[in-house]
Length: 242
Image (cartoon, rainbow, N blue to C red; front, side, top):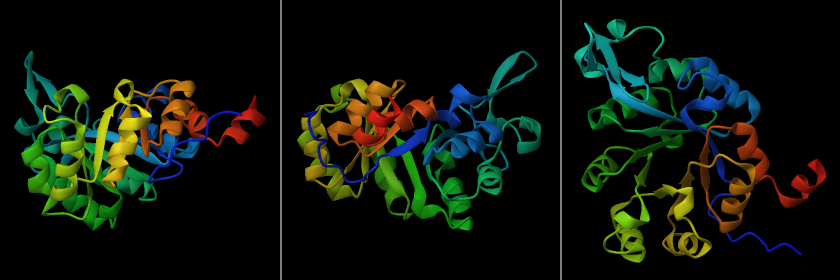
């Protein structure tokens, strides 16, 4: 008999389409986000930068080529950045709000604008705000009902995972987000003991998604929506599809 999956806080785990599911279309494009949801993704992931006129822009790099020089979005109004880069408001207008949304705060200055847009769309409670700066996370925690996610790596936890988990519980940080290769079942069980969600990123293959599901992870990020869904399906469903 195959080993039973370890307990998780969320079953099935959230299937986050990384950058909208960039294996299925241009990354962070509205059409790609919509495709991912049509395929069955239960979450979307994107990066956000703030335009000079205050719009949260969905893009990985957050730069515009201007006269041969790369300049940040914060140097330009939304109209100057161009229609190919969507705003967070446009994502909600196109795709609705029936999904979890993980936002990597590439530009920390965008945090309040992201919260405001999500709140206006009645989607704040399904928003997951990710960053690696502890002080920023604690600061944002006090201003929103959104979930706060500590994006880090095991080697950066100088105090050790148990103390990190305890600090997260004390500070109201809801989830820990680690590369897939960092996770073990024991590590997930540790964070679950403190009632913190466990997320894994760079999950690009069905077998890896299945293994992380069995470790008890609560959310997985990958470019291939179909592989994520196949990996997190119950074992009997996977057997029937073989």
